[in-house]
Length: 418
Ligand SMILES: Cc1ncc(COP(=O)(O)O)c(C=O)c1O
Image 1 (spheres, helix red, strand yellow):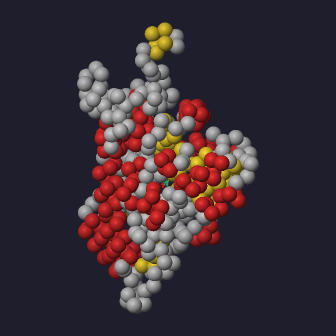
Image 2 (tube, protein in one colour):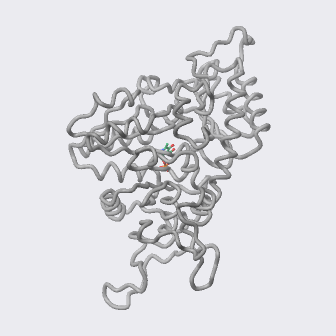
Image 3 (cartoon, helix red, strand yellow):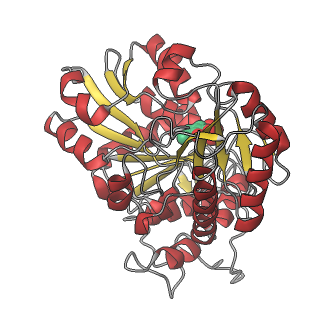
């Protein structure tokens, strides 16, 4: 759905792009029902739409795979929040990735950051290759990019922060070089959400989301989205969206849109909680290192301040626990508020061990080169109370790290990224 086709003047007293995030989150793509005046849009379940004569539909819709009122409204809201002209919604974050990669011609080359989400890595190495699209991974893309570009390079794939090591990339730096070679830059913004970071403002060409995470925010929808400004990208991706049929249901669009309306409130709480937990972890002798972009000790804290709203760190963090993989597993079983589960970005706090769960499919050598060691624990802070979350983490650490009591005097900060 294009913002230009349907500017945000629905409803009549509508917000415009000059409005702030919370106002847009609540109102963009949220017209009052023109028939009943319903303030909340109805769910449009019909798969097909009547035509008055052949090829003349009553309204703008023909068939729900091609477009649907709930999907259009959701896409309009995403476009507004990501400062984009266009947005498209997909059946999952993975389907979004697949659509973008499918849009490349055979023989294309992609450069990606090394520590991408495990499913993205799987698609790049096991699926894209079968269409003759090759991906080169770089652990330090800002430094390596100029050397890695070939005449076939068509796309650069960034996750910032990355999953699960929370490494940041200076998007502007990479985009400047990419654009000199006519290469598009994609940023997976799942970990921060459009409230904390708007990659298009920093030079990215396409921003993608697993809507399953912060945007929906309630762990009850699997969905994805891409937002961008180029008409050409819109034409290519919307054609594929329809041709491949990886579209979300009307009900899921409605639910995700409802979730989106409180994104700013949830993202602020999650950041507050993650900041509290990161500070508590940083001072614990049971920890080797904490990765959290909101800590001044984060190696790319300058990027946090440049790229994130108000220097916010977001709701995600990871840490290396003393005692190896066993301690990491024990920790995740010892928490009482945090649930041991994959996924992130919901109202409820979650923990997991990436080496054995979300990133288990990546060969150990590659995984560890990207900082995903067996003792790494990933934490998604929800919107419970900060003091309860901090207390839960500290009590679980005490239970998980067995053996001789470690004192602060003996503890070192490991790789210095505390
Ligand atoms: C950063 C990131 N991108 C993409 C995805 C894929 O999204 P989905 O699970 O909605 O397919 C995930 C899933 O965890 C993710 O964490």
